[in-house]
Each structure stands twice: as C-alpha cells, then as structure tokens.
Length: 277
Image (cartoon, rainbow, N blue to C red; front, side, top):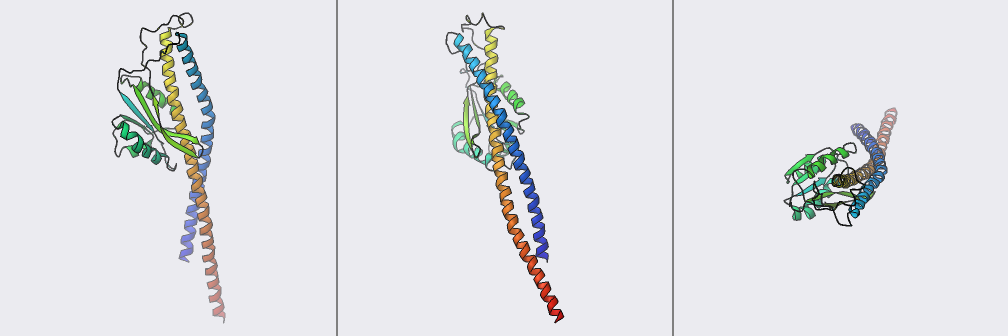
C-alpha cells in the first residue's frame, strides 16, 4: 500500500511539472511570434537608415565619408546570453564557442556581458567591464541606447565584437561573432559638403553624425533582437521536449500504478475468499 501512495504522489508531482512546462511552451511560442513580427519592421528601419546614409555619402562626390576611429586601438567585446534559463544548451553552446574560438584570438579584450545566465558562466574565469543581467524585449532599446552612448563616449572604441546566438532556423541557433566599426563622434573638416549645403538644414556635418549614430544603434538592435528570437525558440524546443517526456513518464507511471492497484485488490479478494472458506 505504501508503494501505491508514493507512486500516486510522484504522478501528481509530474503532472504539476507538465502543466508548468506546457504553459512555458505556449508563452515562448507567443513571444517568439510577436518578436518575428517586430523583426520585419526593425529590418525595414535599419535598411532605410542605411539607404539614407549611403545616399548622403554619394552626394559628397561618391567619396566614402564614414570615418572610423582608426587612430584609437581600443577594442570592446559584447557577449549576449539569456536572462533566464530553461532554454536548453543556449548559453552553454555560446560559452563553449567563446572559449574555443573567440577567447584564443581576443583574450585581452574588455568584455561587457548581457544576460544573467551568461554572466554567471563568465564570472568563473573572466573579468567583466560591465554587467547587464536583464535582457527582455521590454528593455532592449533602452539597453542598446546605453551601450551606444558608452561606445561613442570617451572610450573611443575602434572595433566592436559581438558574440551572440543567431537563429539560422526555428530549430537551429548558432553562436557567431559580428564585427562592427563604430564611427567617430565628429567628422573631419576636410569633407566636401558643397552639394549638401543647398538641401540640408541643419548642417550636413550634424546630419551625418546623427545618422552614423542611428545606424550603429540599428546594428546593435538587430543583433540583440536576433539573440532574443533565438532564445525564445530554444526555450520553446526545450519546454516542448520536457512536456513530451513528462507525458511519456506519466503514461509509464500510470501503468505501474494500475498494476500495483490491481495486484492489491486481487490480494485483498484472495484474503477475503480464504477467510470465508
């Protein structure tokens, strides 16, 4: 009888876990679908800024006007993980890629870590410049604004490397590194603004500086957005697998419970019949 009671308690525990994983699966899919719809608008926004920026550069007699801060040698690495767990190998695969591929080449580069789970993994063997444990769709744009202000601030970084997961498909998320060369805060004085002065208000220099900053932000937003899309698809797959495993375990435990219960009833009937005889 004690085995039956223990097994019944285990069945209730697994049923509770199954309900939780099923709810998280639905939530992950809902968030993923919403992010995919927003991603299309974000890509259009980035494309429009890029086209406008290229158009203004062409107005300057076709000369390249984007000035990177090549006189500075400062580099910065940003690693984007997840804030929450329960997303399979999302973070472990990223940290393995960092240690095997990125760290041997850029081991001395200062690191900014995004996401509590990746921060916990990096704190074991890396010294972090800044830590941002919270990464959600709600705070993404504010976080990107803060990072872009740091990149374009006094540090004057010449090269930005971003290590993050990229969604190759819904079922496959691959770690990768993206290289970004930020623009200088101010453009030099020797650029020919002759063709722009007739149509630009305020000054062309101000417009180009502003567009360069907007384009940098749009690049960061796209990478962060792709990381969130990959995270929620990985979490859905993990919760879907957990729900299916719980369902199989429940079926097996229910069979065992029925066998034990039937055996107990049979034994009681045999004892009852033996007493009557």
